[in-house]
Image (cartoon, rainbow, N blue to C red; front, side, top):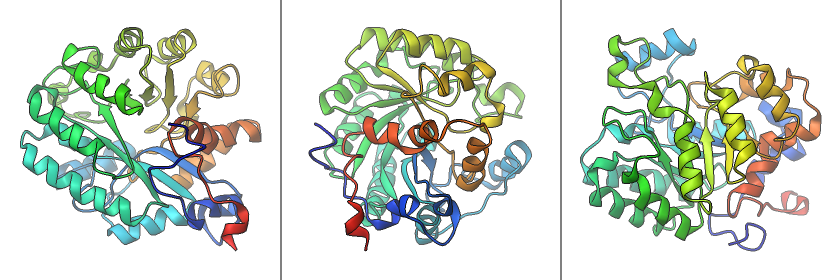
Length: 327
């Protein structure tokens, strides 16, 4: 399905376009809108850190304060910053109760339907050892008319199921049939960081080699690598140059921490393949946008990273109201 012709995911309203036409605060002042390829929920039900100990770690590791918002407050924050986001419920990889997962999905789907200008869609994560239960729930979600719905593969989990493991294959085939990309996390994760043994997480389960294997196995699958792949950024760049079905969104890191090679590719050969991601609410859109601008990239490149590449990549995302609709 062409994103130019049909938009099954809801039509953005004037608030998303505010970043392009001007507003009174946030990133909209800078005349730039943001398509956020990976944000977390800041609400009580969906906050990425699910207990007080984990929320305290947010301050220690990322130097930001955990602040739970209502759904209305979260959406207002997005609108103020000209943001339209794909939301992640990554903590569901720790859940084994399919009924609870289903209830969470239905809740966030309802919020997305209510605010399609701010929430473009949803990344869903599963423990693939749940097998048919997880597969059926993913099928149900794809059919739920809930905006964009895609699979987020988190291989760095205690079950030790990296993205190249064949237990993910039914999900990949369903994504191909649905014409939607999959998100595959790579590189250093904050999950388990600062814990003895890293909560059982093995970092190598998120090595870019697993993305390379999946991309070769399924050339028709659109793969969006998640995070800058630290400390394997050169490997990630090589895979992107080799396989045209692999793109990358760069959530979770300040752009100032990118390697020189990564910065070069963002402004050079691969400028059409990198996209903005935040990790909101752990990292804020205002701070990230400012630090992206500090890299000295040409304005057309920033526009590609901030929204144009994603709007070309995600089905339906190009369907934005013309400027006359904003009056």
